Amino acid sequence: MAKRLMPKKQLEGVGLTLTGACVLLVALVVITLIFMVAQQGLSAFFVDGINFFSFISGTSWVPSDGVYGALPLIVTSFGVMLLATLFTLPIALGSAIFVVEVQPGFGRRVFQPLVELLMGIPSVVYGLIGLTVVNAAMRAIFGDAAGTGAGILSGGIVLAVMILPTVTTLSIDGLAAVPNEYREGSYALGCTRWQTVWHVVLRSAMPSLMTAVILGMTRAFGEALAVQMVIGGVEKVMPAGLLSPAATLTTALTSGFSNATTGSIQYHALWALGLLLMAMSLVFILIIHVIGAKGAKNRD
Amino acid sequence: MSDSLSRRSFLSLAGGTAVVLAGLGLVGCGGSSSSDTSSDSTAKALSGTVNCSGATSFQPLVEAAAKKFEDENPDVTIAITGGGSGQGLSDVRDGKAQIGRSDVFAEEKLDASDAKALTDNTVCVVGMGPIVNSNVDVDDLTTDQLKGIFTGKITDWSEVGGTAGKIQVIERKAGSGTRATFEAAVLGGESAPADFAPVAEEDSSGTVVEKIQQTEGAISYLAFSYFDDTKFKALKVDGVEARAENVCNGSFKIWAYEHMYTKDADEVTQAFIDYMMSDEVQGSMVEEQGFIPANDMKVKKDASGTITNA
Image (cartoon, rainbow over all chains, first blue to last red; front, side, top):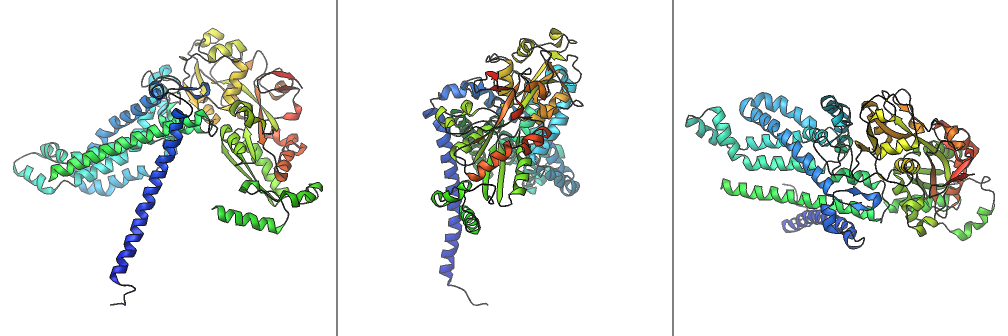
């Protein structure tokens, strides 16, 4: 055996310091980020005197006139997120069942890499496709009612495609993690494949499936670029329906910053939107943790 | 990062002339260079970095000019970034950039005292006009009709002499310089009612081009430099064609200055601004890029939008 470079004890120390430093660095970055966003965002309320409740419940966002009501943005953000999930979930779940339970060979070798390919496509490409294809389709289907074709529905459709790989891949992993004994037990009782999938596999994979959905939702909630290109960007009124052009929290942020001068009320209001977004993602993360903990308990 | 930058700037200082490198946050030794500045600036080589951020509308023009300027002054680097008018104005106010490009007067975006500290260089004028989808059979609108359309009072093309069909209003984002200019000239200080929403508010002129082509009955507005008869139709306003010479003589009212704001400009920055205002840029380049040379204007506009004879 080669000569030891240092005593074992010392090696332990080095390891501890190195890994500890990594943890410390990450923690520091997170704390700094939160502090910065909070500081800038909260100054909209405490320095510029925007009322928090009118900020949350106001139905019009017109920074140039000093009107800051984020409700249309919040509603739209949740709207496109739920729509996207609604479109994606059945497809993701269906293909996950196919890949794990029906045709594992083809699924693993062909389908899964195909879906993962979707994940590597940059947002702007989705946005461009949405702009030319989805918006045009909306106009072709709904005519004048769809305006330029840009709206919540278009946003939801584009997002659905974008979160599809996340939800599908995680669902596949979730289903695959169900121990084979469960299936064998079910078959031994005389259950059909469908009964096994529905009553045994899906049930016991539920926590991982929920996590897949929520991670997909988080991505949909936070996506800016692609949505911005297809949703129309109208911030001043509450969206009236699925075809209404609207703006999400993220699109209002990205398009607003270029016109805001640093330190202005508008600038702080945009940071406040960022703070709101961060708070929402925190909620999502908490939900994932709660589900994870519950799932772990059930399995014991 | 800043370490290596200042080292590089130190080298360039040592290598040649004493100039102010404000772009790197360094203030050159003003005392020792005072003897240099008295000599003719064309006689000695300029060197240094100029950061120029802000409005994207006339960025291509500035980029083209900067390239030529750098060719003539090899030791000068002009770093051009986008970010929008708001960013440009904050950057020059905070000293992050020597030049801040803006479509709007600084007075409209910054505190009065901050705006006062900046020097306004209006390098060119941009004309903007209403445009419609090619299938719209209206060629001419009065200012009042335009106002009606963009405030939601007129909603059908038949009301302004066209074939019946819904008018789809596409706006630029609130806060965009193009929109501010259009609204100042057309709405005349009024703003659209709170319940009127356009069918889209686009972030960029490029998307407007895309949307106006695709959308039946759409109307929007663009800078002349984006005009393209094969893609959409530009309208006359009050019978006046949207063309550069009509802007110059004051008959076409929708236009704005493209500003390059500086704050206590150093030698290199001033040299670049002077270059932008020189015949070399104003003579041909400005028009090639679809803008109107500031020197050709027979009328002028102040920050509050009042037009007077120059």
